[in-house]
Length: 419
Image: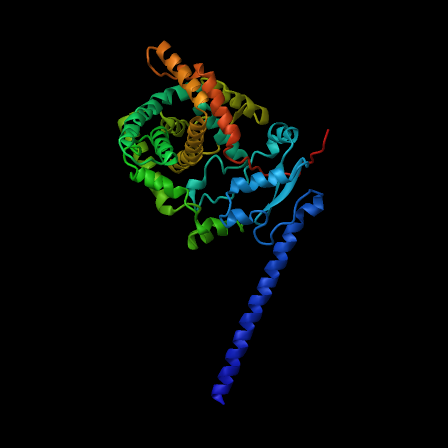
């Protein structure tokens, strides 16, 4: 009898668990399907999404790239001015009309300045960067950083870039003696790593000479796919304790700790020895040591971006965001993420296109050779402004192989109608 009683209890327990799983599954299925009714409410055109992946099924299954998936959605949405789509369960609108896009990004930019990327600075200090920040915090830090990207500041960093570029010829020479080919994308990535390591982190990474250098290895790990990011895509506003407890950080903690420690060591060394390299880190250190309100008119040069910021806010913004070591590390980390893949990919596509069009390649080479000879065979920052054809080739490369996604989220309800 006891055995029978035990079996009955076990059967009831199993049945209860099964019923609970079925109930939860049905609830989630219904909720996921109901979340795909958003565009019906606003009359926005869209195609039927997958109940789980939305319109990103092939991208999430690694059958197509994310960019290629978006390109297909764009091409298939003709002739609509905009089209609704779901990134997993998140409703998004792809803008196809240039005039509407211009209105969003300029006239109504005050409502669309946020990227809508969830981050938790308590659990992930490295995520507290300019790209993720929102509202007044973003505006305050953006005004601070505007002065770091004037032409004068870029000219100051040019010698660092030039030094990294001087290592390209020896590296290519070593490949010329080998019967095997080499990966151009990897080569460009290593060069870009050297440039960003020098300009943002203030160190020589030697990635061109050593493909397995520690900085290069850690940099590659930033872009590795992580299951944590897949989980985070379904949830918003996760508390810090939840992220920490379940190890749901966006980036590997070993990687973020590595880059943070570099910044800490470099800042400590420069402040103790009063040394300067004229790089991005120097500018951040100067901001860290300057506590007063920063006015745009105090910048050495007023850029178009600075003028644009004054149109969406006051003539100055009080620095509510204190430039701490952690915040400095986050900006340098963003510098690496934003510049590494975009620059190396553009260089790769540029070299590929030149290899396919020898006539254009010859014209670019002739222009560069002529300008350098006129400058006593020296490459300078001002010389780069005398290469219009090269600039056109770069712009055409960017047109064909667009980089980055202009994702924005509305801070309030905004009505857009055809004027």
